[in-house]
Length: 79
Image (tube, rainbow, N blue to C red):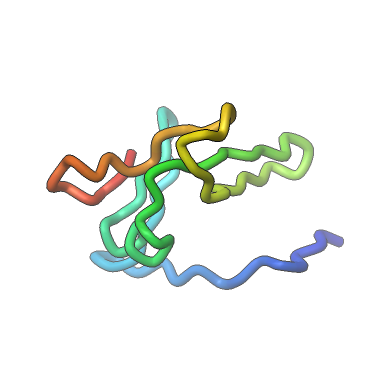
């Protein structure tokens, strides 16, 4: 049985808070980015055995950071 301790439901609704997983990447809608708190940097953590991934908000000083949201761009969607 999969341990889901700490996870919360994420409402996938067309035109609203969506995360799309495709062959070549993951895309977050503007509403999803806003719900995540519009982080500029995240850590991407992957559990290959359980086929799970987590985005963990971090800061510019973190050596494992990945830029998530470019605050200089008007478009708030992330791919």
